[in-house]
Image 1 (cartoon, rainbow, N blue to C red):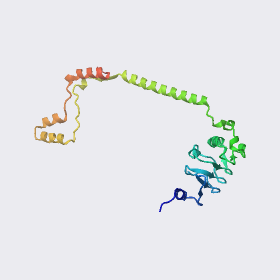
Image 2: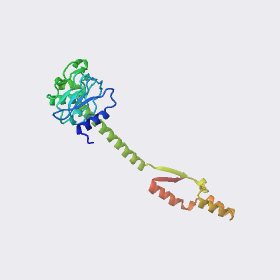
Image 3: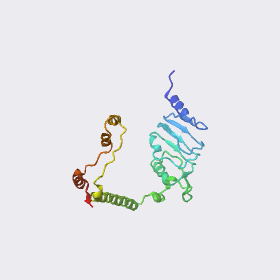
Image 4: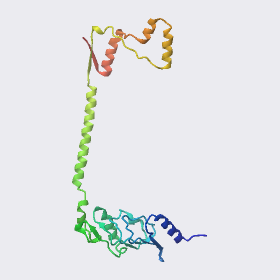
Amino acid sequence: MMLGPGFAVLLFLSSSFAHSSDSFKFSTLPSGGLKVNCISHGLKQIPTFPADTAELHLQHNELSTVPAGHFDAFKNLRMANLSENPFHCGCNIRYLRAWLLRNKAVTPVTPKCASPPSLAHKAIVELSEKDFSACVQDPCSEVRYNFTVAFMLCVLIGLLFWCFRLAKDLTFTLGIGERHVGLEAESLRSLKPKHRMRMSFAAGSSSSRGDELERPLLNMEILPQIIDALHRQHNIKIKET
């Protein structure tokens, strides 16, 4: 059996809002579109309704604001009643005020502010830009913030360049005296398999050969070349004592 489009919409909405304690009332208008009745449901936030909603009744709820852009999806909205809600007329109410001013014919009853006390019982459409003066960001403070961030970034880059230059010009001095003539380099015993095989082979040979493998002598004859390379490549100066 084929279902009509209106019945399909009602079925979708009943499943979408099944979490409510009392089901919202939905009906199809003769002129087209959907009528949504959410009166006295204790709503603190506006649910998401279908885009073809033509009439929206939200009075006598606990709404304090309307999210920015919430009503923009309703292209065929002909009536919206938001009265008897405790709207807080702070910075977040600016979108609703602008929307109400553009859609005066859509709202037969103008919603009013419940807070702050200075704006209580005042119609939202009667709010002026002066009432939102605290929401305007000071342009001078933004300029100062950007200048401070730029200055700190320049200081950080300067410190990095200074550190690189200091490291480049850094000089190390190592003194070698006559007592270092017999200097020997200790070798680290490797645990790699090929090195263990070499050690086991060396164990069958003379002990002197094993000592050569494990404790190679530092050839002092090539020390001048080492000193020269350290000085030219790493700026390390070695002086004789």
